[in-house]
Image (cartoon, rainbow, N blue to C red; front, side, top):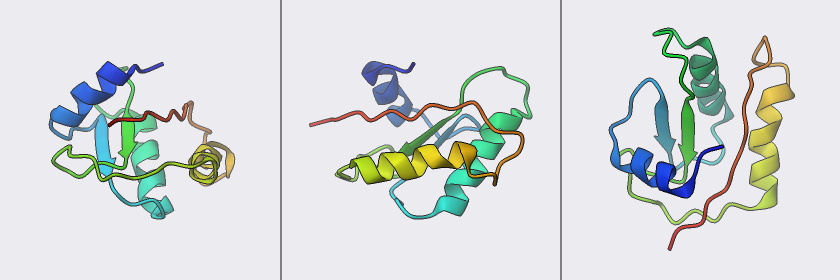
Length: 97
């Protein structure tokens, strides 16, 4: 599981094949593409990928309020059948000032 400090570090790093940031909360195609790319791990890094929702490309937070409905929607990507084989993933929420 990732920690809040690790998320802060990812926010200040550049976007890479392991980190995708977005302020969108409805672009499920974009989310699925990112999760699929992380699962494929083309560079064979064997490291986790992170989709950070609520952050601009430059790492600044958008002020997004994440509710249970959004958490459920994102969690549903794993088992909705659009990504096969099913990816291993977890969904976490972090609150920042």
